[in-house]
Length: 276
Image (tube, rainbow, N blue to C red):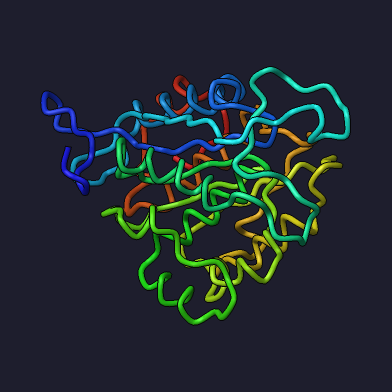
């Protein structure tokens, strides 16, 4: 498949919305896939009922769930028990410190983008959300120049420089946070221009709201309209109304993304408050 082509169904002259899904720390691709089944189901219903009017139109969804390259052991969590398939995108260090292995995590993502891309967008949870924002940034035009201007910062990843991948259309960060160390300045300065939705849990005690808002502030469109809160803890929301807000955001990224549907179609397909 050519690097800048999209997966197209030649029979119906349509294509699928391709989203990279990045799990949180101590999770895995398959586990994150299980935790986001509700999102997939409602996106499929939405797109099947009312395609996004791109050329060709988007009528379905294809999600990709890679697993982070670092195994997480009990020793990494001060002796706490961990799942057998616990993984991370980098070795976790204290907040604000330079993290270990960020380049390796990015390289893992680059492999997926090269093999299955181009992607339309990315969704991530917790550490995966931090990485999602970084990937969105890296794929923007002229971001490499920003890295070259920061003395002593992280070098622009070679794995991304070698890609022929267009900018992403959107990002969704569930319980996201900012990598605050000065080594990562170029990811956030200048601000991320790609639309990014930030989804916060009102009872999240793992990632504080201030940390997620700090990431939102590094996005050009990171005002309150791009921050939504659900009633849960440190988790991906599963309620129809919360997922509806995510779908609304994705549709709004595309011209005519919220094409009107018949009233009975709206109720029959989603049975929830949607923007069409």
